[in-house]
Length: 360
Image 1 (cartoon, helix red, strand yellow):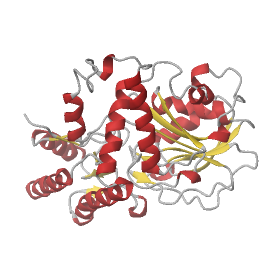
Image 2 (spheres, one colour):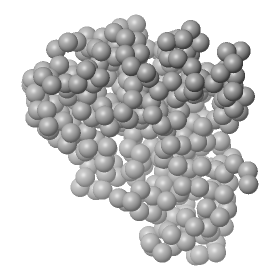
Image 3 (spheres, rainbow, N blue to C red):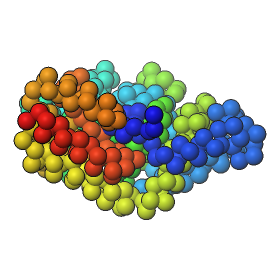
């Protein structure tokens, strides 16, 4: 069987040419006689890999010099604790709850100080982004926290919250490198790479230097202190070397594709094909308010659980994998990250039209 169209929310589809390149280098990376999986993280070859990766992501995102780029482990979920540990000087932070991951981050922060939910879209099953233009943010809040793209519910902030001058912290796991970003608007921007950039096991955190200090909460583990990682250039202990190497290849692929402006255009074109069909379909319905739709994750339903199940099963048989919605919402979800080719979405819509005709 050939490669399927993989609509998984993460770990997710990677660019085929990146995988082929990695396969070619699997046994002998650039004449070293060994795989990147086997080399010392202190070696000259790996030093070049990680420095090159950092240089490329800085260039892609236009990351200013006063921000550090850290390649970390522990998934985005570990940063749910690291964020308050490193930033909660006043033991207070504002959280905007737009889905499961924002909620988990908020719950984790409650262990370290007072986390205040300043807005939430839980009232409508997280199907929209609340108005964040004039929130009641506590005077002494250390930061304002968002999850910028909600993988499960398919929503995305189109306008960043007005943080009233407080530091903005954003988990961008599922929209990382999908469009241009003004890094200066954030104090911390971080995400797991397994959706849009690489294999699971790497988290990239981009942190403004003034936020990286020794002044952390008492009891913060050495490994969770950003300063430990920043001072050691992400090499305090053995980093996820192979994952970082693949991320580096994906950065080069995005550059080759024309950078983040080109990625955004590619992603908008793909998403439009699917959303346009959902808007005219009699059987399938998108579940998100139009203004807040994600370009990366598109949840939809038929309104009938049995029919949803039938659709997922028949789609799988036809080579469209991982279309089942998250267990908390049911239905279907197509994740159409950077590496999903446009024909994958076109063929999915063709299949949906056929399914609708047969099951109308």
